[in-house]
Image (cartoon, rainbow, N blue to C red; front, side, top):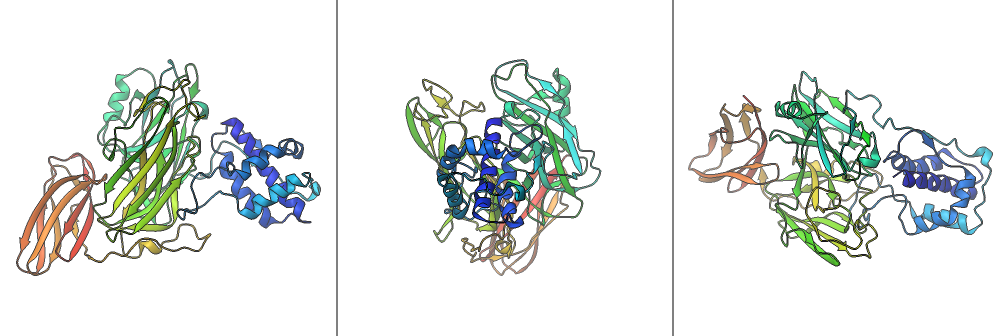
Length: 524
């Protein structure tokens, strides 16, 4: 990862010199454009302070830089911007790309270096400068050479309900960190597991080892800080515990890591957002299982029926080393396609949670799809095995995955007008819903598992009602139908004694209306 960072340092100095050579004065506007492309890349996987390289180093690498930007390998921005409108694109504009090519072809002149902008300095302290909560894992040294998943539980010491608005993971040793998952947890099972095992933390292959844990953030190579749009947040109940899961890949014996996670929090109520792997290789495959024999190329498909109106903020595809492309889209009830993301050249080393330029409305009844291609042949230079070996689904880096995480909230009228990135003209591609959205009330909410809640809603004359309870992956765990001959306010008791703690979606459908409501169950 360090070599990529150095390469980017040279590239961005080259960009600045290229444009500087074309203009007599180096303006703040141009510098801002240059460093906008530069800054995110420097902090992905680097360690320790470093700065942009010298003109001489850039000159010596001018031809490789020309090749990298011409092939659009650098700056790293894997998504296809022509497929969907994504926020905060790092892709070079054509004019900047052409300036670099002209600069190299013209002999790579330095311009007047005395008027060049001051090169920014970077450190490994991260973007979030004033976090309300910082959790550092204990320093841990790996004793073996196999893949290891280790969970570190910590108390948040938050004595009131808060909302997470931004999260940043900073690996202490990015060379041995495959990924980081951050969970909130309302119970103490994780601390019990920690006490039962020697060393800091506990082994936790796959999930966090406790049913009450809910994913609130993640880091993968190339990811930037996870920042929610203004007005949205992920709820952290009072006295929540935090579990940080770190995946260390094989071959890391004797190496140490101490990861830091920064939390930006507010006590002002926000719209509740969720991060859920709705498309995954366990429940969504239509032509699985995910198995790629040696010396073959295979394409797999997934689908998921959306049971409620959703406002999708962003998506995060995830594969490992032999994945080569992935595309995710939805088809609405009107059969119109809703493009989400297309990564035509997958690169494991540059991943992220990609937000849309505008919040995307995806109506109930839509089908969400994903298609991914894998190349398990010697022609794939990312292939970890030579000669190739059979690859199946698994948690190890040398196994494979096919997941798309969705960052979403329950739809409210007007959500599709919320702008996340106003850098470009924005046009919503999502169709409008044709059925009335009606409010419902659930109380108490949150509720204890053994404390009944009541659902209150209004019906039309001779209304036929269907009540469903779903988990956040969209799996229906309860359904019942009711008939009301008279219009008016109706009440239904909700029993939770057979449900785990966590967050659920209550969906109510009438003949001409529908409603959804979040329902939180906490331990007694």
